[in-house]
Amino acid sequence: MVAKSLVNHVFGPYVLRQVIGGGATAEVWRAEHHCDHRPVAVKILREELLRDRFHQRNFLKEQELLGEISHPGIPRLRHQGDLQGRPAFAMDFIPGASLAEVIKQPGLPRQRALLELCDVVGYLHEQDVVHNDLKLDNVLWRSAGGLVLIDYGSIRRVGTMREITSMILREPVRVFNTPTYIAPELIAGKKATKASDCYALGVCAFILLSGQPPYLDKNQSGKLRAHATAQPPSILERIKGFPPNQARTIDGCLAKDPADRPVIAELISAVRTLAR
Image (cartoon, rainbow, N blue to C red; front, side, top):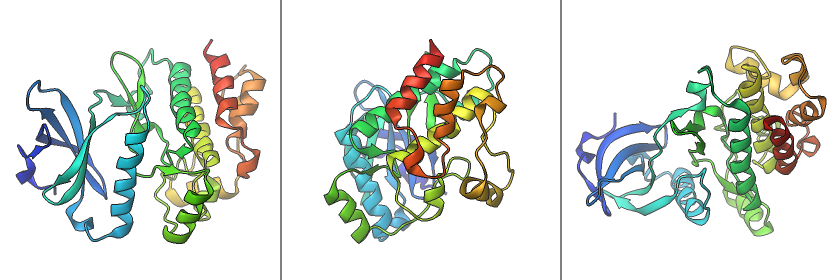
């Protein structure tokens, strides 16, 4: 259980009000500015992980990278510091439900949602950043329309030899990805790349456009085995009359070999054609 004593604690210009979420590494609180009551989300490293160098480094890396990127589909970093000796940061509070929750609602513009998600990931990849936990649960669909990609706890910067060398030397391989979306190479313990993000986007495309993930196994071990060894299905098998050229691009995201997958620009182009 999270500590109720944090209610009404002050974090910079913000006052904590209530817990709104959390996971194994952090608690997320709703807070508001003490002057105009503007809401923010405050993420706080769990107290029991203060001596865990791996999780503490990841938490600080998340803060650092969020401070370096700016996109309408990404929460903006508002404040960072310590709260009762625990690393914490404030970011935009995004009202809305996840795409995983609203996907069955009538009227959801699925192709547009997929295009917006690809656009956010495209921006990240331009910055040599991978999200590394892409799934519909981590995409908030705002009631006024449009989406925001959240949960950057597994974010990584790639593409520079300095960063790659640092990751190899200091960071142990740990797999935290959701089995429904995980790329085969991550199951094998390899590092996250832009190609593994594109694999997860391919799974998102299958779910958004066809209503089902590419692999239909119910249990976790079955899902992992399918991602690692099963022949990927084609979205043409799920949707009658789906445009073949766009199907090839979406299907290509599920290629076992990362080198055989399309880059994000190719996926954006294919999805944009669908959304017209």
